[in-house]
Length: 333
Image 1: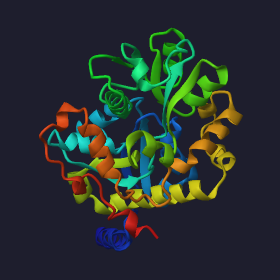
Image 2: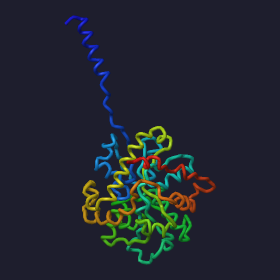
Image 3: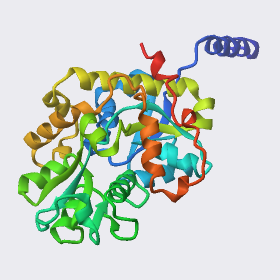
Image 4: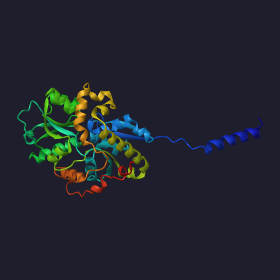
């Protein structure tokens, strides 16, 4: 082939490729979950299992972090783009000058339970835990926030009880078995595991909206997808895809049985007790929203709870409208 002919052929091939649409690579997103085996954060793994992220053209990597406060720190450091964790961090961080917002509100109840060890039969109320050591997932975590609020509300000032970070699952159970903690706040399926063995009993139940209102004075929006506000503003198409996937997942939860949902979850989440996992999920499904929308009055309850004990909020003016957005969930078809 002559040199001129080779040049023309190469030019034709180059023109053909230039005219073809470029293959769209999936958007790579990394989300940190504050313990993705916890039922309160079930939508993250369920969305992955149902293929909803891929359906939206997203390549989502879920990283696991046992405490929400540690997940929050990873996001602030720029290691991840968002966190599946409690909304109350959005309020707490604004008081520190950092703006993050809930873009999908997954739950309108914490799904947490204050358990007391069966070795403490004299404990009948939060006030009886004065001088005791209480388990939380991490210092600065939502379990710590709620524990501090309920103790102060019961008339026990900060400093007259101890919060000990013990994580969740097996580490929480071992801490209670070894009497390192006399009570503690945890989630399903850890709650069901301890109740089944009789090693603990329920002191305060925050697994439903009704019981949460009794204990906290109002609706307490909890599990959410929260992200830095500046990142959301710069990446709206990607955030919309995430909202689409999570709202579809919430609809799935609302329209399927606990047994059907359990089948979509990793088998090791059952911790050897599938029936117990399904039972816990049946009792906890009601905590999830059906549309990802922030419940009315919820942010105000969170601010009231945190403001009652947290020195971070003393004298600070919090703009709740900047702690969440419904822009994306409102557009989900």
